[in-house]
Length: 396
Image (cartoon, rainbow, N blue to C red; front, side, top):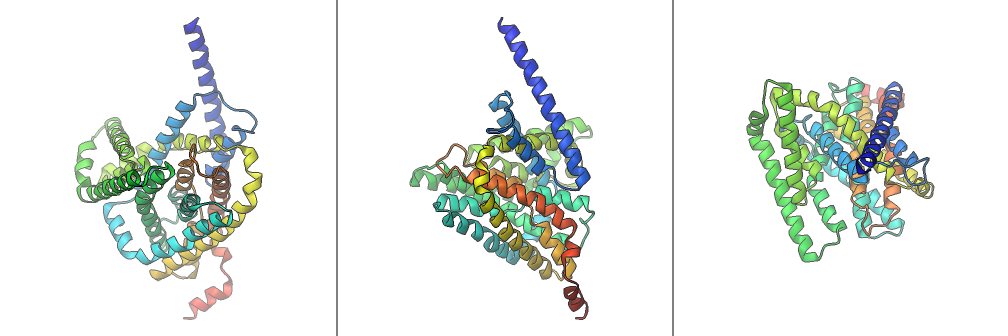
């Protein structure tokens, strides 16, 4: 009897997983044809089948949560694989001003919105992070799809993203401790350990990454994939034990790898990343009650308008700093609009905490709006620049 029941459970799980995968395949295909990121579609799918939606899958919540965490780890690993240690150093050295402008223009509106909504300092800190951080994953994909990776303005965009991603190595551990409501003394210790661990890990990735590269290097694709995946999960787990985000640990593993190993690993990991990352975004949608969205749509829309505009100013300024013309500045600004994985990670920290329950649906609606608007505006950024601005620039 027990075996029969277990067999039925496994069969149902396989059927549900198969239906989810097929549904996500359809959404990914539709998004590809429209030329937009599939992330908004995955979020909507999660919303439709979550609380207050059409139906709720019977899959184990533990399974979905683990798959989702693997997804974000792989997403940040592949993002780290986009950068070399030299690019990180150069990005920090050349774009310090742009990073400061980015912080003030985009974090402050989130914090201000939290206080206007009657929330406290915890919610303000969280919403500031949600509005501050652009989606490196979405932006990198959009730039590649549009063939703009070699454009003059792209280094300015990537430099801002590098600074944001590195800032997350400090921000996420601090927020995680604060949300956990630890005592002041314990919190101070936890934050100090997290910052120290992050600093050491970053130094090791930049200075001694070649040793990790040599350790996982292999002629066989299978051996290389298993080595990189094993190292990533190990470092991510250790990071989580030290109250540092597992995603940040994965990002630093990606940065540490170099040369042909970096290139091959990126190609091998990409299919796994797409599969598990899709489950991550779906799970986030499943955890949001669809009935909680209508009350926050107006606030999310206004916040999206304000911080969409401030990201355009950020990109414009960053591109101007390296001498890019008006059209390139507009493209850089539009490229930075999209929010995605980090914003959702930050919002996900609040689940099960004492943070105001409206923060998660607000973040979901906000990310959904900008994950759609960002790629679309990036595609048409050239056409949105007034002709007189272009002529004024050309006449100089």
